[in-house]
Amino acid sequence: MSIENILSTSADSMSDEQIKEFLTEQGVGTLSLPDGEIPYAVPMSFGYDGDSTLYFLFLLFGTESRKETLSDRAQGARFVVYSAQSMYDWQSVNLTGQISAVPEDEWDELRSAMENAWHPNLFSSAHPMRGIQGYQLQIDEWTGIQQTE
Image 1 (cartoon, rainbow, N blue to C red):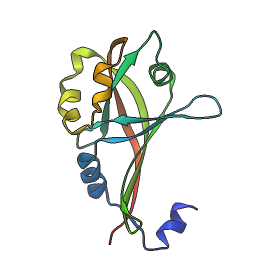
Image 2: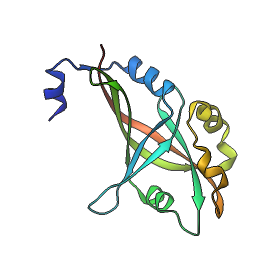
Image 3: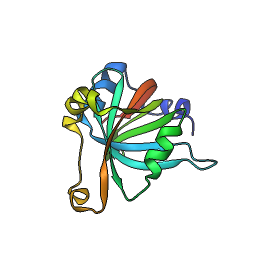
Image 4: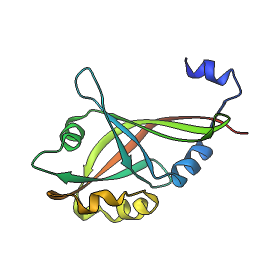
């Protein structure tokens, strides 16, 4: 079903302001990275700068991180954020853009944006963790749809 078909029902497009508000309120979504024929998708906590950038902190375990490797070589990425209260009350935002590492000496904006991110406590005790790397997704395009009761 295309977005046009969905919008012909009781769903509505979200305005840019509604998308910005939604991203500010949320703190978790799904990051999809190119990986051959099948994309690699992983749930991620995120922070939003209120304008055009999402931020992520990758917790790096073991000697290699698939998420880190794919992000470092990706030409682009997709990120989906949604909230579903009921079948008649939901929102979904789909973003595309360029993903890149954020050098540690440039983490001030990342830290500020990450205040609303959701962080499971599971990872705080996982071993062996080799570090944390910040990433940003410069948003090139976004679409949002919603249905509200």
